[in-house]
Length: 231
Image (cartoon, rainbow, N blue to C red; front, side):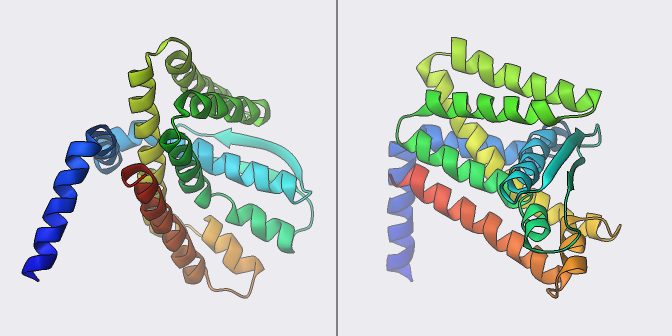
């Protein structure tokens, strides 16, 4: 056990020495996600990614996309038309919670490949695509505000600022994806969560869908950490 602890300490020291910026970005994102006051203000970014995931999967599945609504309490709603059961609807409901985590992993790949600017511009394109389908004033405002922030960093930011901002954004989406699944327990009691809807239209119990969301979010954090810290 002593050898294992010594190995862990050497690995941690090496990471701190070689990847201080990545670790600082992770720490900052973790504080924002864990600090309830900050999370209330920033959670809407995770909601944008969540609803964007629903919308994208709905389109891929051949469903009609009616629109996206984002609310001041950081909740959201994506409405699509089509069959009330079947794989298309299942995948549409399934596409929400994994979306922030998958975006975090994708961003981590680009950051690790020194393609930070490309990552930021891809984020802007995704936000514009989301904005086209937003159907309420508050939703338009928050998507525009988020896009303006990302755009300002992408256009005027120095390379070091872009790298730091992109790393924080990746970690925030990853940690935020985990916290959003944790909060799913409360929304389930209202009977209107994605897990509830999936449980209602499939033979798989609601709790199994929540477990799947947990596994996907946790796996994304581990994969992205490996990409960013051990590249």
